Image (tube, rainbow, N blue to C red; front, side):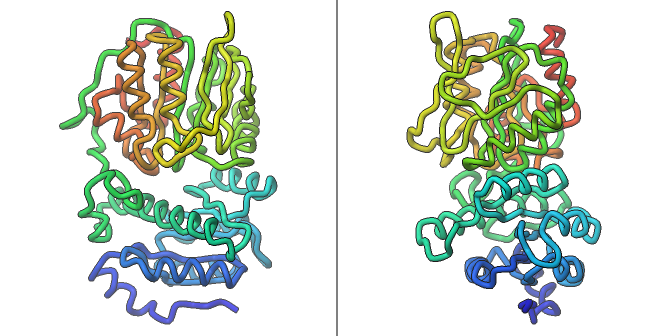
Length: 391
């Protein structure tokens, strides 16, 4: 039976006092809902305003409970998450929805489909709530994503974030998102640098929160302009990255697959770094091939963008073209610096069209970009660079 918040009438009062993020939980498992409720209620930046066991109840109550963020289970009775998703968005335009699912191939496929339908991100659920390490990791990921997405959402509509988020130094706490810069680019503190005059021989893309939607948009807009190898590091767990590659191919018509050790880079083909492996590019005779490793996490991630960018800069030099899309944190910043040092080119998604402007913002604010552009303009911009016609 649904556990509905009895404090809805006090929600505005509490919001005025501390501006916590208002969260609705939707999961048919009372154990998972209870676990999430305890974690979120213990954090002053979060407020659970509703807790329901299926999509029907979620759709019925999402508007009245005042939810800003929904943690939505994939598999539920009566109405599953994929069915509920568009209805929730219709009820509350602009609501932020995180899909929660176990790491099965079927659930990964559903979650990636949900991302293409308007979900902002996903949360991999532990197989068992009794697994201490898995539950702790789930808790950390839950809080990190809610705070990053919530802060970006509030900023986008000019509303205050919770006080501790708003006052935290950018990038000092893994639970707090990096503070974004202004929407207008270039702006104070953002200095653009000249692009390489060398025509790119590779396109490397890094992305995280909101990345799948951005990847579909960018690659779908490029299509026949892609005449170089494309390598992608998207922060995702195993299984999800294989599904992501399949969706990219189905969406864009470009050959795409999850990378394997020793894969040859081919013009016009896309390789996606597999979950839990860093992907780098190495020379093998006259060829350039993929190398995978499970070295330590970089920027709390594996795969991470920085190792991929570092390896590309070393091999391709000024013929390197990198793009940093929406995502939390600053992964890709150090690797982008390597691109700049060897004369390559870095482009970044702008703040207004990013779900979270952590990664692209970090690169832009470091003065490493030749352009910072809205998502809808990136395909044509990238195409001009790839075709050697960018100025």
